[in-house]
Amino acid sequence: MNAHDELAGRSVLIVEDECVIAIDLAEVLTERGATIVGPAFTIEAAFELIAAERSLDVAVLDMQLDSTCDYAIAEALAKRCVPTVFATGLRSADIPARFASVPRCEKPIDLEMIVQAVAEEIARHRRSWLRCQQLTATG
Image 1 (tube, rainbow, N blue to C red):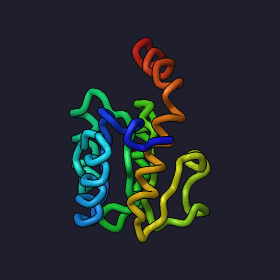
Image 2 (cartoon, helix red, strand yellow; image 1 turned 90 degrees about the vertical axis):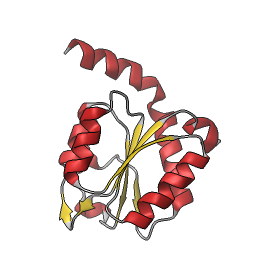
Image 3 (cartoon, rainbow, N blue to C red; image 1 turned 180 degrees about the vertical axis):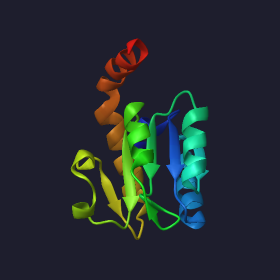
Image 4 (cartoon, rainbow, N blue to C red; image 1 turned 60 degrees about the vertical axis):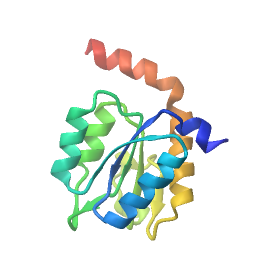
């Protein structure tokens, strides 16, 4: 799979409280053709971006912002049918079962691994997006 083809023109929300990681990730994703939303460095900023953006294609989410582990952002993204990749230091055993299928890239961050995971999530969810969008529009 060509990550550039999958990412071209896609909006990617970055939620990461480590500035260097967020900027490096934004740069790499932009080089692959993605449009970056954010980055959001706090939980509040993440919710503001989610509310403000009509269309999000995928999100990269650090699960521990401001030293707080909060799944509310992941829940909000799931309700909007936004595929998500966790970029986190959490072990898979620490992630609730309802998010067990979310791809997880462990810190320290390997930028290329995250890019590949994001591209794979876009490809995996391509078919279900239309159906999910139709369901959320009617319900």
